[in-house]
Length: 307
Image 1: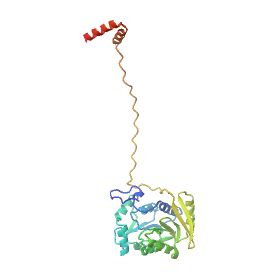
Image 2: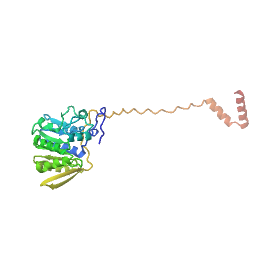
Image 3: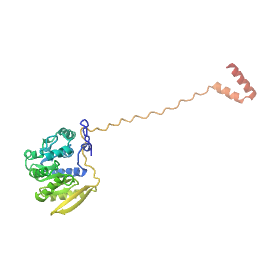
Image 4: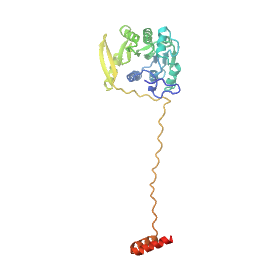
């Protein structure tokens, strides 16, 4: 997981943004949202609990014309009760609205609509039956998650998708209880489970479930299993070395420097020619070599005396 970057160092890639958004869930977000768009479904997007913005940035790529995108988080604001206040102080001390907005703007020209405050603000701010996709990743306390699920049911289109984070983590039993309560008593139908999230709908899950399983069976990097529970099919997915979906670099990413043009190879330089010996000197040397030794010694002696 990425560390919290300094304000002077904006993210270059999605992985530079701190947060918990596994590759499998990136694939599933992309698949569910793209499927809606291919089917001509229009509706608003909502995320409750954004942390540093990793999943919000990813979801924002799927905002269509005439759709609205709303995010809600306490950020550095006051929590509505003591338990929520203690949760925020423990897990989200570094979160500020400015940090989220700076991260989001690194990848998008415009911010989503930001509601700063508890998720109880959401029902009064968003029209019923207006959303096609809702991601709930806010408080882990049962009372808040129970209310967030109830709000999602009222805000979603009939076949809209809700995503519940941390539904089976050992440190979030409140999320688990609220999630399975919604499945058993409040009409929520699971479409699939990832390692971290439950994807569900209050509509008919079978068409989207079948399409999803068909897609997964064509991949070698995702394990699929199906179980029966409480009269419904539970589709479980697990990554097997799955690569992350392609995501564009941020506006602050450094482009690779162009390579300098290759310089032409220098022309080979011939070694300097040795000067030819002067004819007179060469002739004298040959003559000396051919004379009798007595005469040669006399000549050399005479040269020495002259020098």
